[in-house]
Image 1 (tube, helix red, strand yellow):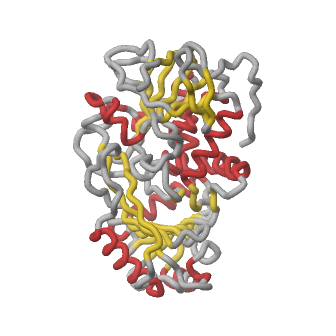
Image 2 (image 1 turned 180 degrees about the vertical axis):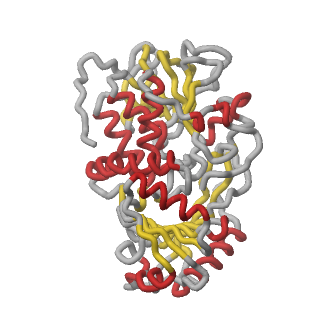
Image 3 (image 1 turned 90 degrees about the vertical axis):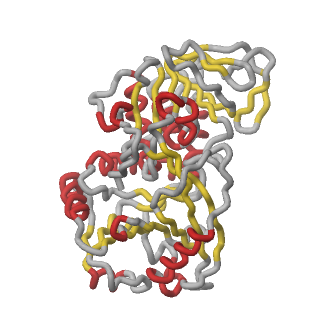
Length: 417
């Protein structure tokens, strides 16, 4: 995917109420009266940034807003790294989204100076040959993905630094790897602005969503108007749309850990290990090798307790650290007792079953809802943005019912891994 240049001629400049200072990439400037946009996108995380980018590519005048800044510390798109993989069992839609997103991640990575995509492969391994394995392989064959099936002997030969005695089979996906999350979003927002989009750090007030929106009020008392409004504000979606999404999106507290590797030991770096995920009989652990000298990452994919993204403290729990250490000692014996480099609390914003949300608001016809990443959404960002932009502009060829509000239940029953 290549860049597309846009002339700034005719592109409306950023505007707030008269005399109000607007902050764009740290620069203060005076702006004039409120203006009308084609689309306002609320939330500069991975979904919002890619949606804004695709809308701008379509020729729209786009304003991108975020209350704290792109990929900030409390955002689900903040933090260091995310896996991108194509194994989803029979859920071909997510395999396609991940695979079709790869060229766009590569394009962005080439622009960034530092890598956004570490294309080191991903290894998904299983204690027994689950139906998930054969379903994934069937989808991969259909999409012509070069996935390798490895038995225990092959795994032991390739990765002797890992314990394999309880594993039957692994799937190695060489086309995939690790995405640098914060860097990716901030780089994309920079490209969006270069292409003529407007970006502003500003908080919005929850709108009256009983009808189409005429304008959107900001926390400083000013307002912005647009033909369409896209809300891609992650764990804040159930707060902004409390009646509709409050019972249907479930933000959970997730804890990740980075452990130190032995000095001069290359066995745990990206030259020796891919990104990895252990199906672990449904209790998935995942991690990444020591990338960019931050440490060896490990986390449990199990949903944690509920979290309020505004008020939740970001201290990890002793129990989670103990679980991570126990898993590390079992699967990577040489790292037993490794020092803890860093710990972080982020969040998933889960739908009832793990499906994404990309749909028009059922009451407000010019409002679009994009979210419910459900712990696996980051990798799909480019394709989520494309789909959402085509939905907004009326160019979408086929609606995916699984992304609809109507399919989001009020009881959790996770089905997408």
